[in-house]
Image (cartoon, rainbow, N blue to C red; front, side, top):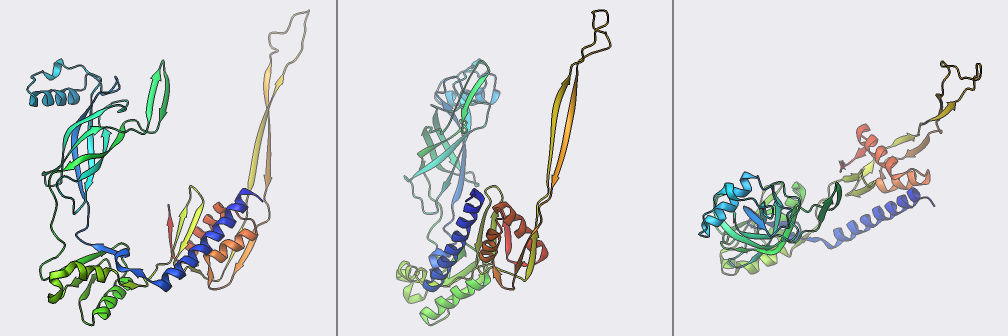
Length: 379
């Protein structure tokens, strides 16, 4: 069995498995907390500018004005006055530090941070980040970062020979930042309401969520705002224990509406079908045209002797011999009845030994022809 044939069989089993999983999920229902989140539960991006020291000659260029000025500023804050033009160190690099502050983080919580070089440093291996304030879009300091870098790569060069793995100019510091200031309060809005945001916006799914909440409590407590948001009003008698009310609400289950979608990864040849994907009645004819051009170079070495000496006009020549071969196998046809699914299409193409790349091309053609009734996502 060829590799392409084996890959297609695995793809068919995968599509069938996805169909069974979708049926099981539809029967059991999905919790509301798995379909949406509180609007207040959003991360907040932080960024900072700092210095990494302790590099073994792999830092920024000693003539970098940005690096020298930064080092001079740090030393001045520590009580050491050194002009920037007097610094010539290759063991320092200027870096950008980035992280994400969770909504409910409190002072003292630890955050993972990403550190990346913004100069011409060759490597950050073995470096230590000096204390760096991390600011939000409002300019306020929300965390302080410091610690030894963990770099998942290296780069060594000598006499023009370079050995490199991954990107040595970027690294991480697990628990490298300490939260100094929290963000936001409880998600309860004015009027005793909370808003939820859908992970996958869909009108039908939001409508089912609203109906499920109102049916569970026997009154109108939920209202749809748009396909991506809905609002829940906490009854006055439950506001003292609104955590318990929201926990019970998020535990409600519905059957979400799944959008017909086919995801194609051209790099790996993977095709994943989600939702109820059908294909109209159509006929597929697929064939290959193979053109092979080969060139052989032959040497012409004449032997001419005039009076025992070679003629000056006679010389060795390289003569190319080119051969062109064209082969066009007969096209393979597949007839599909109305209502065929993507899994059935893949099974039919598997019987004619089509490769996964051929399947991707055929799906693109079906979408262009209007026979594939689903959203085609190409990655």
